[in-house]
Length: 319
Image 1 (cartoon, rainbow, N blue to C red):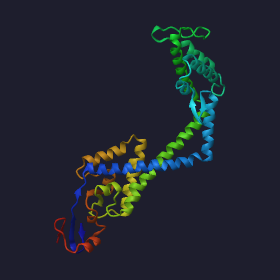
Image 2: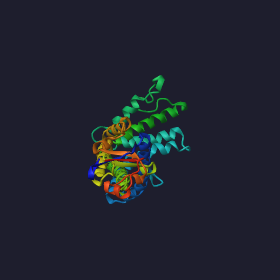
Image 3: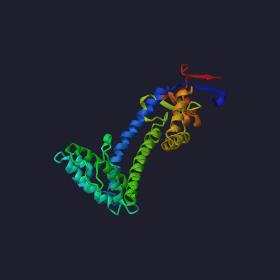
């Protein structure tokens, strides 16, 4: 780099190795994940007290309870089949009877079967049910139990559990229940992503703005890495912002919808390139170097102010 009086200043830094860079990034990501979990607790608490979300939750709970496939137990909505499965006081026949009653009620409920005959669906399940290898039908032509031997009690119970899973599938097709569930899931997903992206901005952008010299994250500070521009001096605010924008919007955001391809390409560049530049470093011509914090200078003027005499071990000044 040419400086005043036609002097050329050469700043020599050791390239940061790929393992060292990955270690720094993993440490920062760990901080992001931990912070995300902490923030999510508060975020979900706010969301769950929101009137709109409460209304959505009630619509979803009403859909579950009205189906008869779910019951409220200890102020928690649970699947009937799960409760019966864990109830050791009931016989297989008693569990089967309870499931049969719930299934009959559900498949005859016009709230969930207004385009097809639900009762026909359930009866067809009984009509086609058989005893596995022997292929003996489980039900007679009038849909009564065909195998009365107590050895088959578990077989019939397994049939009703399987039919219960089928009923759950039909429940999830219900428009009102499905819409409420979809909205709730979207809220949770966007809350999770939004919180994670917020912590990413904090640890990968705000923190380096605070640790201005070398634009260090906590991970970079721990591994003694720093950022410099191609002229050997500190990365300017605007150039660092451009670098972060490429990293955040191209490598992180797009990777969420593109199967991590952009971030994989960037990591591959970092590993195979001799200068270990990732994609965002390559575009803005920045370099991650192994250096003590006080060897990265903001600009030429700061260097001249701090080093009136040149240390020939690190810097060569040519006339």
